[in-house]
Image (cartoon, rainbow, N blue to C red):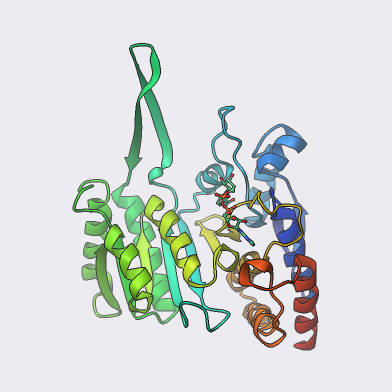
Length: 343
Ligand code: NAD
């Protein structure tokens, strides 16, 4: 197998632990990637004085493919989020976040949802400032959200094409156009127009207001299939749907652009459990499966997903967040054994 050059960013907190587990699983699958390991986040500051060092950017520019652990943004010090900067730098406009039940019998069973989140616009871009009044430097806080027709259209087109390519039956546009008539109205209007013009009848298109969507997802998540939404709503909804399938340890994400793709877990660096060897690596492992699919290594992706299911359900090995007692290393050993057995 010719190895595919890819950038590997261990990241912060539990990042190095779950990245090590994921690399071990990929090694057992024949080591399809030739890693160029680079730093970012707090590790980037420690190694190169920059949360997004030039060498890391140059590596991704070369490989156009990365697997990354979570990155922490230091509060204060004027640093912008490295995640937001990476998405902007490589124009990773689509964030694909599937949530599927891997362990049956939880509070919600047989969940199979995808959140497609716009990744570059909206209120999330962090264009904020304060207005000082009467000696209070933070008397007024302001944030500017920006959604463009072109940005909305390319993300909606990505979501619609993804729905078609994966045989999904329904796409729901999630918005708040009743209140934020311009900012999220443009997204809804663009989606409805695109559907009428190009996709009508190929799947069902629906729309729902974000607050009602949150309630409906908890009451009856099975009514949804693909949820497509703006940046901040997508950020919140993807944690909500992670909760439907066992929590943040279970949901992967792919940041996709025209020039590069970066795969990661939905969760953050989990500082509360970092260094304890108890993190659940499943989310990043599922992100690696998405990366394999992206590189047209569908057999390896399927083997990895099968091994994960067998480890969790047949061997009943799981980490504490899922009610199990395995350490990250125990889980990885059991998973690698399953991958080897399925060779
Ligand atoms: P978090 O996702 O790191 O953690 C939330 C809770 O979920 C914690 O209790 C944590 O222990 C648990 N958890 C998360 N992942 C887990 C796993 N794999 N196994 C077991 N338990 C897990 O959210 P936070 O604490 O709000 O954020 C911590 C830092 O991560 C912040 O600096 C934030 O900015 C950053 N962050 C980064 C990314 C990213 O790099 N894509 C995403 C979200 C947050």
